Image 1: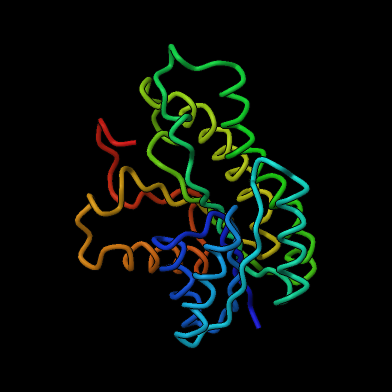
Image 2: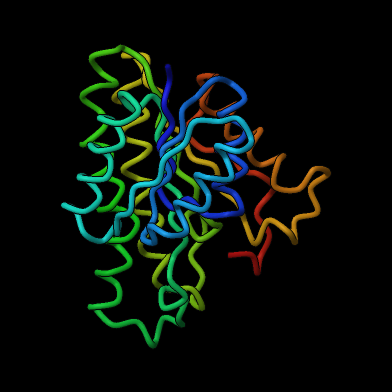
Length: 224
């Protein structure tokens, strides 16, 4: 059976994506730092009729992230779809004049380097199968830098560049790499079906080959 690994799984978008993919027959691997919260999410999904397990990891720690993904594959099966959507720390949203080299490096570890480690862990099985998808979820600073959100304005574009290069390199192998840019908080976007609309869009990115970047809504000044 197909397996989705959701890195940065939480009770909002992560749970919505888990339900959406679960309805398509996917087994669900939930990955974030808090095992107790993951166990609660997995139990709720299981009660709803899905198969789900949680695997704790910190995306800033390569060994932790790789171990969680390998454990997920050993438990549920090879990863078919990878969603990389950890929620950035508020420290990464500081003004540019407060940005230190140490904080910039941590932001890059969280976004770009974490993604690279995750991809290098799951990609061999996808290439062997000749199919799969890698989906990046980012805010508006992946497209337009904002001085008030300095950390993500540096880290998200680096993550995006890696993703776009993967998109170009892997498309011929049947592996789709895409990015969904969500400018601002989902509750403020006034979508007809709220977060479920976002989960539907993510499913479409997995199921259909297309351009690398999709904007959930047009980017406006002032949206992160």
